[in-house]
Length: 92
Image (cartoon, rainbow, N blue to C red; front, top):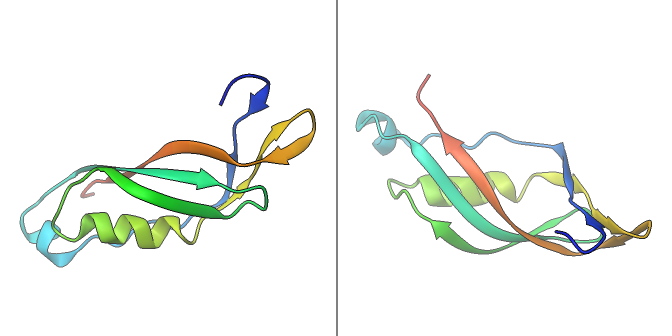
């Protein structure tokens, strides 16, 4: 993002499922995923940048695949934008 490109924004978001293993261990943290928000608002996940384990990485990927975005724009035209997306896991 930059160079005249406005960042994508989230339209719909699904919260990730907390794995039973992580819940029992009372494990919390943030999974960081490298992704591309496509011109159509879909998301392509490239890799896990910061892992938590305990099944939380996989659950973060599953949740993010269901998110939709308003795409990034350059001069009023939708463009693909690469970015890191943080998925937080906090016991409430």
